[in-house]
Image 1 (cartoon, rainbow, N blue to C red):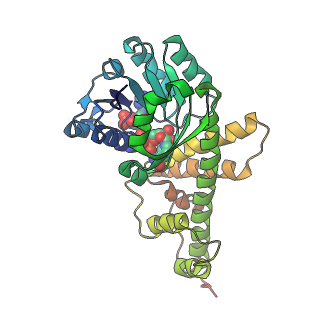
Image 2 (image 1 turned 60 degrees about the vertical axis):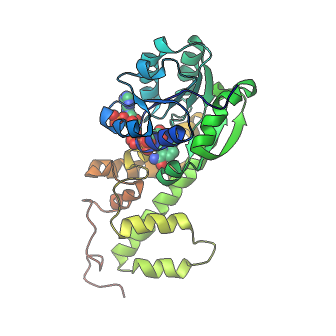
Image 3 (image 1 turned 120 degrees about the horizontal axis):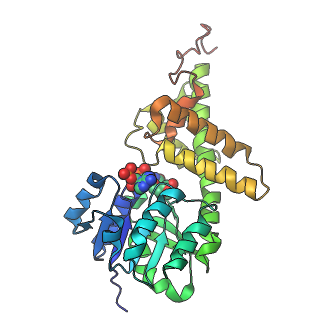
Length: 307
Ligand code: NAP
């Protein structure tokens, strides 16, 4: 078998478009489909065929990559694609779809004779653009050579978490990693919001932790977006983070684990969506700390300053 695969990417949002571009640049014949066609069109310049329907995109594909919003969207799109899929096609399901969606997705793959890979990714817009995502994958070892060149095109590393995609071993690892990402994002936003409310210079907070074990690149990146008002375009949108927080809480509930921080994150993201910030970067959950979505005066509004 050569290393070239005919690939169909279904969903060319923030992540899917960047992944598709790297798949094309690695030399794989590419077809793309997106619900809003205009987001798929720019990929034509990379040599991709822009399909009008999911079925047209997957026809003749060796590997189908789904990178949509959530499990129900994947199910709907793959049901439309299914009649055109040939048996033996590999399906790399990279959407963060959670555990609850998995049985139906894996069942659909089985019904249509596809080889199902649970393959969520770690990393956001920039690593997706650079082809340095971490692919968390689970699927049958004897079919991995089908998907390996595609994972190599989008990622810097593939971590094999299991041998049966339907078990969700890769999704489990993804949910654990995302619970950390969301907790850090929430804590960063709250610390900065508290600083603003108390009249503490954000720079003073960042300075006191600089270089110590509590300092971290992720805090600095998110703080930069908030403080410099660079919340669009999003690397990871608030509405997507809200969905992930709900998936994490629900996975915890189903497995007897109470997750207070994830619940609070879900609530903060929900409020930020309500404030009209759903398409901003998830760092915009910072604004959920302020009742009307607007920060108080720098002295905290109590007229007493920061003394
Ligand atoms: P995004 O830019 O919002 O893209 C979402 C995609 O899903 C778009 O192509 C959208 O189509 C499509 N979609 C939504 N609902 C649909 C439906 N009912 N039917 C058909 N298509 C539908 O999101 P993203 O950031 O690329 O994220 C995609 C997935 O990757 C999510 O599961 C997310 O959790 C996961 N992820 C994201 C990141 C990140 O940092 N951004 C990192 C790792 C994993 P339209 O363009 O027509 O709206």
